[in-house]
Length: 389
Image (spheres, rainbow, N blue to C red):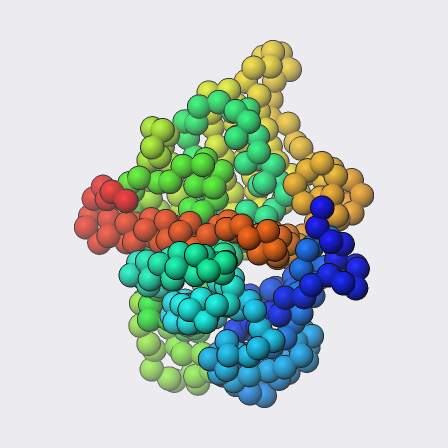
């Protein structure tokens, strides 16, 4: 058993985080909370936060509980009190920061998608493999693996409860860009974000499909579109000249798994009325499993081996202490929220580092997702041609 996190002699691990906006806030709360919930073998010490705007970085560090603030991520990596670098920046900086941190002997947690390009992702996975030989660990932050209901679905599939897999269908629907008046942000610029809906939210659907099925996608056929091709820059006056949107607004594609199962994916930020609707369903010869992020404490399970007179999708409330991650949270029926996935993620990473184990999802897993993203883009650019991965 690992040392209890509440014990004063639990070893500390210094955390340095780069970026402090949306994901930075989620990760900060996770590092501040994880040792209060789980009996982790390493207690995270929130050593330093880095951001280019000094005043904003200092304000964020004070707000979230970081001891120090830096304006240069290189300075953060060089700090003796930082042993793990948490990367919560736009995708165009992931490769440079992650590779530098790994080469410096620092563990790395990097937000998804791993990189903006396949070449960058390959370089990052290579750096992680080299670092692992020296006991340095790297994880990519696909936090939805840490939803207890998703982890339970993975367990049931691994146990053979739905039998041979036939279908996977996954969609991630948002609507925050449906209004053409929404200003241009970095997420709409290819040089900063890499891609649009495909990489931003489609990456989650891809990772969940491969994680739950236990199989990598082997080929895809896709299409992508941009509905609003120009937007006004953020902060610009009403008469300002518009700038081009250089990423996709929506992406749809089909795929195949090595077992012969077929898959269907949709990612869009134009699904009016859908705020954060991630769903995935897997159909097998013996049953089906379905998950909806908007009901993230529930898993739907259909067992075809039951009598037809009583068989039907059952609702499993995933809050029991023998469900994944729930042993340390609240009593049965007391539901968790979106932010708790990051706490669970931090628990797993700290446990793996202490054990000398390779965390999952690894940078190799992130590279596999990147290969799928690149294949979808290639297919879409060539008339939805079937593209092998």
